[in-house]
Amino acid sequence: MAEPELCRLLIDCLKRDGPAVEAARLSNLTQEDWQAFLALAAAQRVRSLLRHRLRQKGLSDAVPGKAAEALRNASRRNTVNNLRLYGELRLLLSGLKHEGIPLILLKGIYLADAVYNNIGLREMHDIDVLARPADLTRVAGILIKMGYTPLQPIDADITINAMHHLPSLVRKDYGTFEVHWNLTRPGDSYSIDPGSLWERSIPVHIAGCDATALSPEDLLLHLCMHFSYQHRFAFGLRPSCDIAEAIAGFGPALDWRTVVERAGLRGWQRGVYLSLRLAGELAGADVPADILEELHPADMTEDVLEAARTQVFTDKKLVYSIPAPFAELLQSRSLWGKSRIFWQRVFLPRAIIAAQYSVQADSPRIYGCYLRRFADVLRRHSRTLTKYRQNDTQVKALAERTGRIACWLSGPAAISRK
Image (cartoon, rainbow, N blue to C red):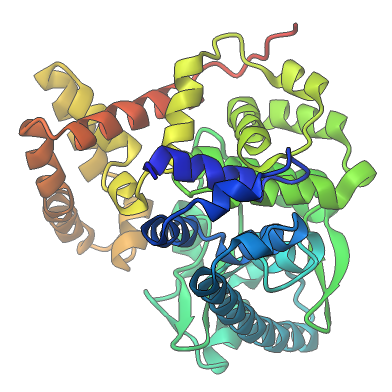
C-alpha cells in the first residue's frame, strides 16, 4: 500500500468518534503493509494510542497476530517507561513540597494522567515543568541531588535572558527533565509574560502528590503554540491527538470564548487556528465551527493548510535540518538577502550566545564563541546546502514548505470577522 494511503488509514484509526473504519481495510493489508503501518505509527509516536483505538472501535480481530503482538509490546514498554517517569516526578514533587516550591506540570506528564486518563496511552520521553524564575536554581538543585546531570552548566540569569527553560537535566535509564520558566523564549514574536499562567493555574493531584497545572484554556493554547510556532507542525500526529483529547477531556469546562480572546491578546491566532484545524482533520478534535470561523485569518489559503499537513508526515530529522531561517536563506534570491540572514544567524544576541556556549555575556570569551558559532552553522547546514544546490527535490520542497509556513505564521495578527 502506498504511504499516503497508510497515512490516511492511520488517521482514520486514530480519530475520536470518527466514521467507522471498515475492518477490510486492515484485513487486506499485506505483511509488508503492516510493517510499514506500524513503522509509521512508531514515527508518529502513537502506537499505544493506535492499539487503544483499534480496541475501542472493535477492530482488534482485523489485526494479524504479529502486528497485534508488536502493538501490545510497544504499549507495554510505553507504560513501563511512563511509570518510571511518574516515579521520578513523585520524588521531585516531594522534594519541592519540603522546600515550599510550587511547580506547574506541562504537556505529556499531565496530559497522560488528566486527559488521556491512562498513563500508558501517551508516549513521552521527558517531563516538562514550569517553575517561577526565582526557583529555577533550587529546582535544578533538587534534581541534581536525585542524580540528574545538566547537559550544560546551570545559570538561571542566562536562561532568563535568552532561553525559556534550563538546559535539560538527564539521568540515564531514568528520564529527562526540562525546567521552564516560561512557555516562550524572550524576544520571540509570540512571547508572553508567564505571570498570568500562575494566577490561573489549577490544583491537581498526580503521581500521589499535589501539584498545579495550566488552566484548560491555557493548556489548549500552549498545545497549539507548541505545535505551530515552536515546531512548525513537524511533530507528527501526536500534537493533534493531544489537542483532540484535551478538548474532549475538559468538555464544558473549556471556555472557548476565553481561548479566542487569549489567542488574540497573545498574537497566537494564526497558529491556534491552524493547529485546531489540523487537529479536527487528523484526530477528530471537536472544535466548534463558529470558533474556527472566528479565528479564521483573512489570508488563509489551501496551500498553507496543505503545507502544514504535509509537514506533519515529513521525516522529523529532515525537517529539523532546515529550520525556518535556513529555509529563508535558501530561498532568498539576492546575495544581500542571503548575507543578511547568515549574519543574523551567526551574530545572535550576546545573551543567546552565552546560553549556548555556557559563558558569561560580559566575558571576553564571548568573542571566541562567535567564531565557534560561525563554524557550527557551517558544519550543521553544509550537507543540506549541498543537496539544495544539487536540486535535491525533497530538500527543495521542504525548504519551500518550511518557508511558506514560517512566513504565514509571522503575518498580521488580525482575525477576519465572517
